[in-house]
Length: 364
Ligand SMILES: [Zn+2]
Image 1: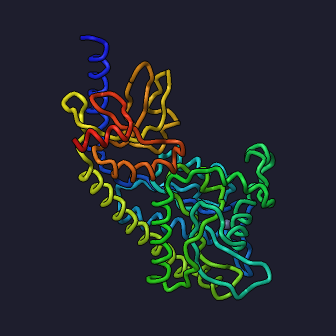
Image 2: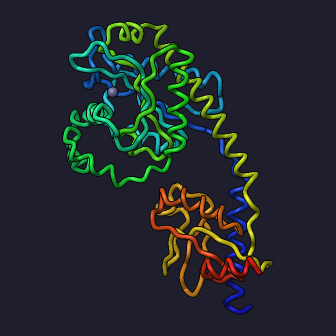
């Protein structure tokens, strides 16, 4: 076998193993991490009659119980189950360590000198579009000030200085679609089933979500600065309703993404394997390197079915593989959110060719 055939064989084997792995991988939610905000020395928002930390702990535990009772196979992990202080960054770390499929952070809102405002809102990670959303982010991020060495721990971030928020500009939010979906289900349930006033789905620069490497939302269950809402949220019944709303949202979200995952897998084209075909195919190149990179490397985080090819002494890593250029253009739009400098490449008989050439061959 000459060298080229060896590379070819290698690529074929890679393709087969990665694709068969992909096709068996029907996505199911296995683990959820529920984070009751604040705790211990950090009371969170302070109402006339209650602390945020107590209300949200109770709602978190009730939500977890609903999930366990209805889906015994799903592992529910809490960041806290008692009144203890947990540093902000440990919360998403717990979710990351447990390889959670979803991270829910539960909070309650309050406003100074304003008892009128009330209602629920669910946040995803993003750039704030209004001063109010930035205010929520500042309030929730400020809990890091309870930690002694917060400047070191949080990369010099000052939660009270708007200029600090520029670091969020650089982030890529991998899980924005799923996070948005969970947030929408949550607000929908609060409004339709629990009868709350929904203030909608919002985006803000929330540290606790930034560090979570899975879909994640921060739920504000209402304003304890509003006496009526505070009364409701303090009551056993109110907490139970809110928890059941979050549970119902989770159930809809779970159904939606699991259904979606099996559909995508069914629809996935069979890989075109180089060996057999003189057919042209396209893929999205995400990385090339003179050295081999492990497919478990951090650079591929968030990407599925990465394929390695070795062409002219260079290792190239790509995702997606289709003879339909349009499919790959769509794929690239998604991948771009993770790898901004990715691009489309075409292959013919195991060799990279220009898109123009590829189109020409396809026409002929
Ligand atoms: Zn809070």
